[in-house]
Length: 127
Image (tube, rainbow, N blue to C red; front, side, top):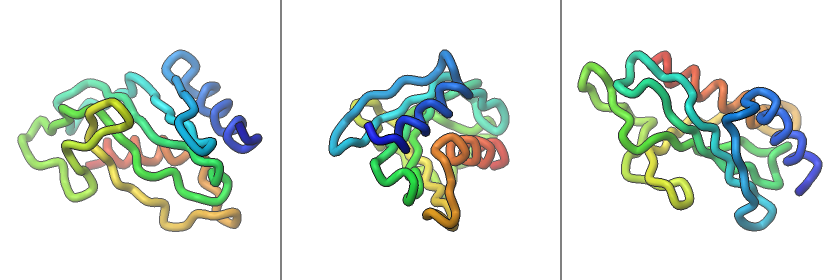
C-alpha cells in the first residue's frame, strides 16, 4: 500500500468510521465501499452504498467512476439521466455507474477520494 493510498483510506475511515470497507484488488489498487449514505429526494431509496477504486496514481488522477445500488430509481418515475449507466457491476456487486469526472485533476488540482465521493453524493442529491 502506497503512502498516498494509506492517507486516502485513513481520511475515508475518519469520515465514515463504521461504514467503510476496502480490499486490495490488483496492481496495488483498492476496491472501496461506503455503505448506507443517505439519499432521500429525488430517489425512492433512502440510502445507497458507493463503490470506487483507488489506484496507486491517486495523487495525480481522478477517482472515477463511482457505483451505487443497482435498483436506484427516482420518486417521479423519470429516468436517472445521462450520467447514470444501469446494468453495470462494481467488482462482484450489481450496480449503477455514476459518471462524474473532475474537471481538473492532477498534482496542481488535488481532489482526494473523500472529497470526490462527497461531491458525487451531493451532485446526486441535487438532480
